[in-house]
Image (cartoon, rainbow, N blue to C red; front, top):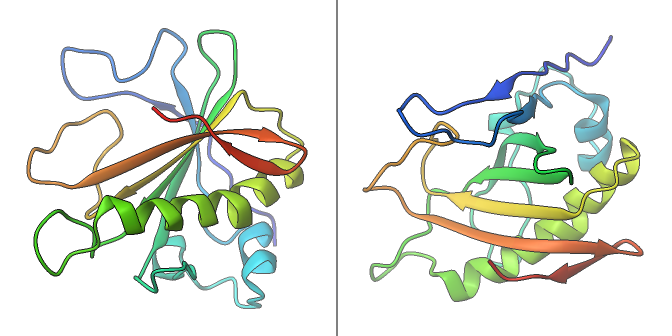
Length: 161
């Protein structure tokens, strides 16, 4: 079975541009052998949104999409995850705990993804959102956490946004 990879520019549905001139390319990883091999799964029926990824906090996290943004002249790879338990209210997983999850996702998923596709990004951005949000759209009620990393010899070096 061939891996269905779709390349599209990610644009916001608003007056402001979500990304610069050339935009970000969206790679759907549904059914891709990489994700299945990485997670040790053998069924291509699993959708990306149904595959929970293990993180230090134990919260349910799944990959929403991967965006490649090559403007302005350097490649940024954005790994967007849904983590429905994050938030700033009591009983939710706050940024302090979620930041360890983002670093873990960088080390375990982003590094392998970059190696698999032989990419050389200037930055890797890991984002967690408590609900699906279209790239470039604002959602005032949503909670989102972001971290940026530089990859150096298969290590995630925190860059801070």
